Amino acid sequence: MQRRECLKGFVALAALGMIPAAVADIEAVRPLGRVRDLRADIWLSETALMKRLLAAEAVIVGEHHDNPEHHRLERWLINRLAHYDQLGGVAMEMLDPSQQARLARHSTAELLALSEADLRNLLQWNEGWDWQAYGPTLRRVLELGVMPRAANLERQTIKELVAANQAPELPQVVIAAQRQALIEGHCNMLPEHMLDGLLAAQVARDQAMAVALGELPATAVLICGSGHARRDLGVALHSDGMPLSLGLIELAPSQNDWRSALPVSVDDAPPYDLAWFTPTVERGDVCGALRERFAGGQRSK
Image 1: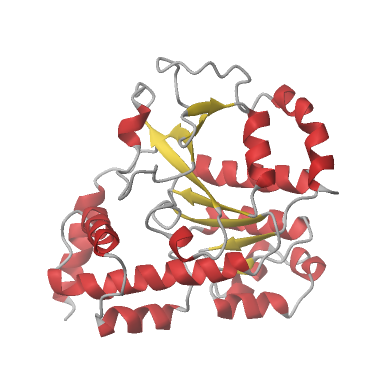
Image 2: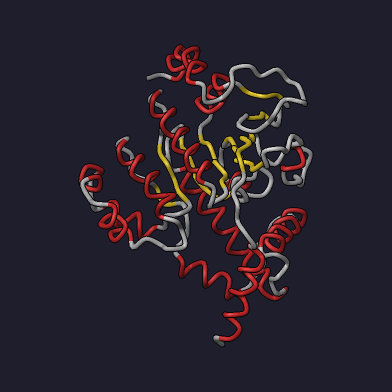
């Protein structure tokens, strides 16, 4: 189906009710569940959102890995692109090249015939990624006749980059922002001597994701963490094209100041092209858990 032919069906989208059709540009409107075009500074209806998605060569979706609503919205987005015969491919941060090679030995039909346990075993799934979150997405992509594309590096490669501890060559403003994000993301507990290596691994993963996305036809989808999806710091910096950056942004139920939920950009443009505001999830004492993890690592030495 040609892209302009796809646009004929947009009117029907408003009836789905997933995104409110009324999008009066009023700051007092409740943002939860809505999509904001951060460049145009307007709320988008579902019809307008789909126009943006279908017009893009690639869409980078930035999630919080432990938020079930983010995984649901990712599957919704994939399904809608497929509905308009516009899903070029799906790349995932959760897959590495060795896993892609294992998938490539089988057809999508053969993979779909596997049980959840067998598919998980075939992939030698990394337990750091919640299978309950990503298994359904993988299976849905396969059901659509699409072979998932690995977007991450091998774990050994990442370990080697961290161990080498060499800062990547990037503009200083980007380096500073990335370092600060790493520090805050680890509750200010990271030793200074580890930062260069961790930053090198982060940037190398951004570059690998950009390559994976660039090898897929339009409209390609990349599922990754919210930091990787940032237009000013992440994958888009290393992309040859102009991917659309969609951040899934958490808000508390009573939080109407959506602007304060966005990360500060390193330039004059927004950190994402689009922001989709979702409920947050209860995480408990994240920093306490991280402190125990670090303490355990020290005791094991």
